[in-house]
Image (cartoon, rainbow, N blue to C red; front, top):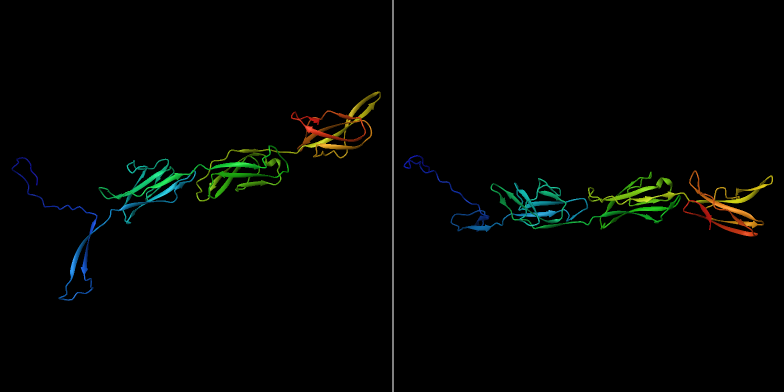
Length: 329
């Protein structure tokens, strides 16, 4: 009822309203005997049983429990027994921690799912109604983050200098790869693009293969998850040195003598060997050598002349020096 003004004036009392609290117990009516048809005069018993109904509980599931490099894990929350109208609440760490919302490492979806990229212990629970009725918390799920996989480019054979025509293999290795299947991607400054395999075999190296090479791996099961690019490796393909051999020939001009150099027969295209044997030496003669490579040929400076004073076979070795000159060894 209500009052106003003079306290002697008041309204009549309102109709009664009964407020009931729904409890989680359930009443069940049973009949004994439970015959489908009861005849007049038969004795039957009705029994009301109160059955306890457990509080609804949230269930938390994870598609995988290891966060791939650069990727995320999807968590799904549901209520058991299934029913509709639930909103889901997410927690990381302790149950009393703050609710998770969409951040850099968490994406909250509207269908009872979130995607997380940070390791930790996760929980969830459901709520519905006004005021909110909460389910029990789910069991926890521990999400771990994989050790970062690293891509590394290796060269076999690992020579410091690669010559034209040699066979070499570039390989992309994923460290800490585990049992995961990977796809590979190469990046290079050379004009030869490797295929998307972990090995790039060059059966005959050429100048076009020179450049920087780097690679990365991508998980076949998680296309959005990949390693960082590897450190680059520099491949330099050089032409082989060829050696050119000359004989010192004296020439006269009136009363004056001078010396000129003539290629030894068979040496016009150079030799791959850095040694040359002169047979049938019968008189004093001088010899020198130089090296060249590339097309057009780049020549080093010629070596100093060496004179042979005795007859017989003569074996000379020609070596390249750091100054791009040639000297006898």
